Length: 108
Image (tube, rainbow, N blue to C red; front, side, top):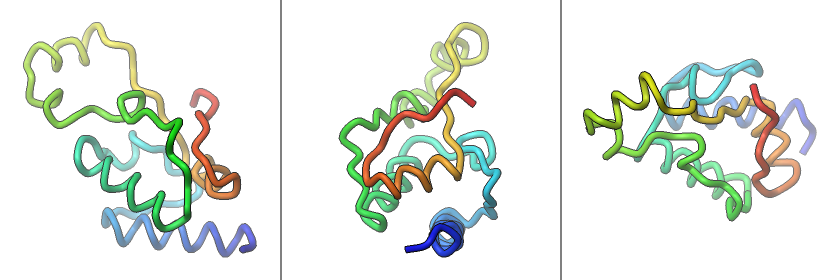
């Protein structure tokens, strides 16, 4: 699969899955704002569609969990004390697809 085709296919896949426009500059999570179950479904569907091994992917590094989003103390920590979650870009997902397994991106 050539890279341009892969980029277009991934763009259409993401847009159909989460109903948000994306481009090659999209940064996950800032631009898409998905967390919890939505994030789990997104990564699961991405893995199935492109045969990506997610063994080394730790969702807690990237996404808030549903229960965390409703806990006042955790919300306070998120706003004032907690280290920020890691992020990854559209282009990083392309590289992951090409490699066939998840690897942590460089810091954005």
